[in-house]
Image 1 (cartoon, rainbow over the protein chains, first blue to last red):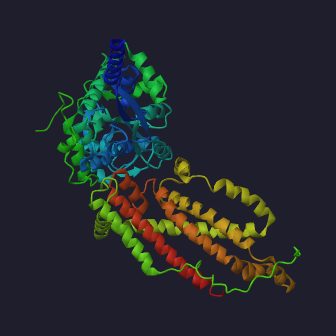
Image 2: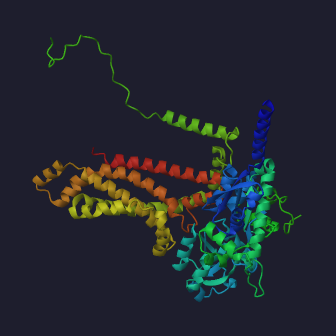
Length: 338
Length: 270
């Protein structure tokens, strides 16, 4: 009788212990509902986070900035979004570290376009050589669009200070300004650019990726999370890379015609992206950004971003690029400065 | 048996003086002391490590940011740009608002048509209309002045209309019985009578103009205290952000003082 009672107790304890060991660690991931964070949605849907023992909760945001703020305040564990001057100012105060790559501008992939208004095109804005002194709509000072223009100015050797950069806060405002001939050009995501070109509302000057490849986005966490819950970040990166590989094989391999071709899994993955972003599959396909299958960063570009923003007076001089990247989670990062 | 209609005569007793209180006064040393205590506690919380400076910069760092803005001369250029927008937008909105408000106070047709229009249009968030404003007015100075002017206009209409409505009708009837012409009644009775209400409306509309300068300068402004605050927020330069907000507060205080002077001067007949 007594022995049976003990056995039952032991069984209950063992069960509890097993249950405890199997309970997944919670991780909150801050993300925008954009295709550039596609691998996050794929990892969630295909159970890659769960396979790493993570109970991932996706926290959706409307803009990039609040994601970094939420990471600092501890409302999310990991954030993934575009890199802006605001991010570097926050990270530079020792608040955030980049741990892996997100999307990047890459030759042959159409993520953001430079468009000219038909009137400006007629008046002679036909290529980047005519870009000097033109007015250009952007969302905000220190945004990814602003940096793309900075790289363009470096490549075509025109002084960006002579361009009138008009900060209009939102993409619809930018489209309005171009349609009303208030600005001569703008930089805008492919999902908006392609329909505008087809309707004859704008002329394509070129793609950011073809002109100036650069590291557009990244995953980041606070130094505290990295130090105290390192395995959480390791498992997050590993699940992300698994999904990034799927993403790459489905959408990003170059076909013989110089355009990215669909892999066998493209249809299934498009359905996942469509479900999470709320956009139709046809709308998503032309603007799928390049995502490194191993989540490797263009490290030299991150250093350059910090320097460029500092030269524009948008990032504090005390910010050091070396201090805000943690390269230990992914091997084989590109162009690591000595 | 006592008669219920007659209250029992109370025994004579001395009643202590119960007056006093309920008469708050303004003591300037208390105002300053409050300010000093709040700022001191804030500075102490940040310096003592209770609050991370990433979330709340200390008053001292805000002061330093303000100082560098003043030294570089940036502050004056931002202020000049904003003040000209606020001034012009407020003046236009106020003039149009007073005219429409008086008409609504005087005429049945204006009142019947105006009240639903004001109620329908006043609460529209101007930011939601920004893409349309860009198409209609472009991205120059016009949309910024229009944005401020619109907000000011509605606040003034409401204040003027209520002010005119509040003028005692007996005064108007008296003017009529003395044979005053319509214009004379408006100029000598209605407007002076409505003036306190209109001036109270100025306080609200001036604050509205300051509130709206930030949304007005969301679109394509290179200079201006509103665009400065916005871009500091975008760049996560929280000390600069709060320095800009402090400038807006001081501006609000100064406009308040100016209006008090104006009130005293215009209402000296009371």
